[in-house]
Length: 366
Image 1 (cartoon, helix red, strand yellow):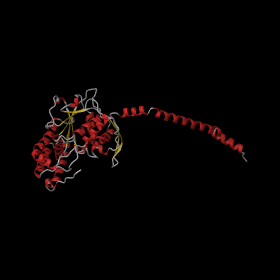
Image 2 (tube, rainbow, N blue to C red; image 1 turned 60 degrees about the vertical axis):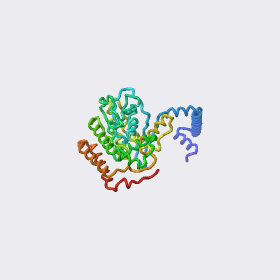
Image 3 (cartoon, one colour; image 1 turned 120 degrees about the horizontal axis):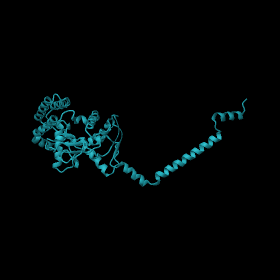
Image 4 (cartoon, helix red, strand yellow; image 1 turned 180 degrees about the vertical axis):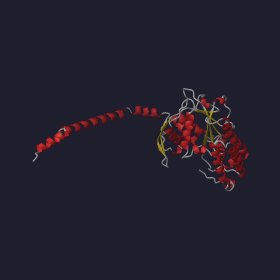
């Protein structure tokens, strides 16, 4: 029979360490860990003001998105967006052209976020000449010819269905004429109808000429067509944004963010209302930037007042249909333009099947 002493010796042999030594070592480790934790806690609490200032410094003029998942469980990844800067080197500028009311400022902010470089417009260039993109409504009255434009060989045409871009432009004019903040107020229905009847023919012609000007004067691969409806679409928007980023990345001196970051950047700028997890603890300058993003991301999202789908008379609908059909024939060899025009024609045809819109428009109050 094995004695107890023999068993203890066997256990000592198997472990290689005497049980008393094991106990002593464990107590030593626990004591050391307590000392380390106490020291760490003291360092965290030693200067809370300095720590807060450092945290604010890191957050200054920057907001960070977490890993986005919308209610449909789409995963947009991670991204950090910082305010755009003036490049220290020369960059090749691109025109971002649109008829007013087509999401130009939203796209402006998206371009800045995807490239990290400042943009401007054809009136002021934001005080800079070396910019990644120049927003313009030329040849409409809201734009102007830019001196030296012939040296800018790349263009992005942002186009939106005239059924919605023309009313959106009118809302902008209504706010301006009534000294209201931008993107704050929807015009009353009767004001829209009055303006529409006085200006419809001319504005539809401006919409058409604007698209034709940029299609005729800029060709692939130095031109990209961006359909507004797809850019803001939950499913198609991230891919459209990636196409824009690739287009800009081919400009001299421009390096766009990595393709895997673009969906998150798109979600932050275009779908800001769904970005509930976006960090907004910013100092004044960054807060101002974020408020601007929110106001400009969707031209009508912040507008209060009567809510309605802007109506058109049957004669005006026929005029739009003729215009779209003529343009579709003209650009039959341009697949992207032809496709979006066909979509606009289909939507217009569906609306034309309904009762007269002026008499049947539903107005809701917010």
